[in-house]
Every structure is written in C-alpha cells, then in structure tokens.
Length: 201
Image 1 (tube, rainbow, N blue to C red):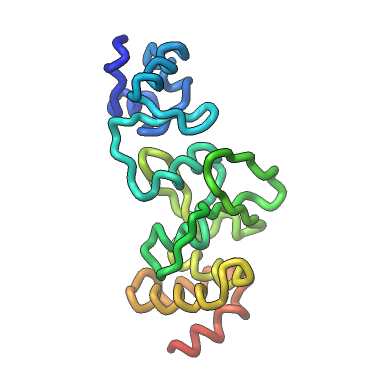
Image 2 (image 1 turned 30 degrees about the vertical axis):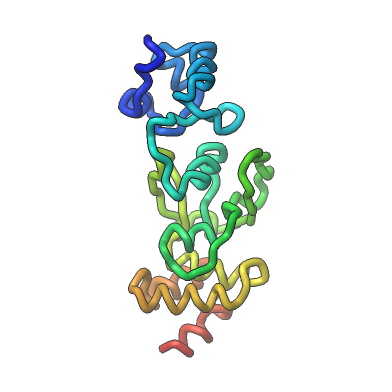
C-alpha cells in the first residue's frame, strides 16, 4: 500500500476513525516502519504512545477529549468537560475531567491534562451516554447526571458552577426536573439537589 493511501474511510473499515492504533494500520497492510514514515512526512500525528491520528481530518474543539477517551476506553467524561460538551454554563477547564470505577487503577496519561474522579455503585452506569467524538467511542454523562455530579463534587467544581449548571439546564430544556431528580436519587444526592430545585420552582 502506498503511504498516501491511508484514508479515514479505510480506518473506519477496520473499526477505527481519525484516531487509531498501530494494529488498525497493520490490518490495512501498513507496517510499523511505514507508519513511522507517515509521521515523519506529516501525514499522521503520533498523539501518545500507541495512539496516532490522521492529519487529513480537521481536529474539532473536542480533540483532547477524544484523545483521552481513545487512551482510556473505560473513562466517562464528566463534570466540567461534560458541561462543555453539552453547552451548559460558562465554566471552562483546560483539564479533561473523567471518571473511572472506584477500585480501578488510575491510568497514566501523558501529554494531556486530566482530572480523575471515581464513580461507584449505580453511579458507574446511570446517566452515562455513548457518543462518537472524532471517531472515538466516548461515554459522557447526560445533562441531568452532569448537574447532579456538580453538586456531588461541589468541593471540586464549586457551588456556583453547580447552581449555574442547574439553572441553565432547566432554562434551556436540556433536562427536566424529573430527570434531574431521578439522577439525584440513583446517585444518592437527593438531599443535595432537592432544596435548589425547589428554590427554582
């Protein structure tokens, strides 16, 4: 295969996307040596150890998030990063906020600033929605779940951030009161959220 023949369509045919691993390239007949040549020629970017990206695909604002999720498939994008993805609030963070299971070993991620929190019990799965970001399977907390998490982790993100997220989510119809209440109940945060919901009713 000619080096210039690596396309997004071909990567998709082997279950990858703009981000891919050497095994995906090998499935297309591209050896590791050829892959390194592509990097040298600027056709491919080496994002991190064992992770590459096709430069012909224009990166989006969610480039870093997609890269982190490609490196840590079990991660759940949450809190400030989930707020940004859903277009909720004004709080921005240079870190990618992810959650991992309570007993899981913290991943080592080089090249990207990451903030890790831990979910346990029902909160590991409830309100976690699958998306595809830059071709990467990505799990992100829903708007309702994200609001509840902001109250649960208010010491990390700030109470004002949680209140802003709640107000804007309700105002813009990104989640209903019932959806937020259900998420709060499942995640054991009813007592934290209900007083503020009642105050906005």
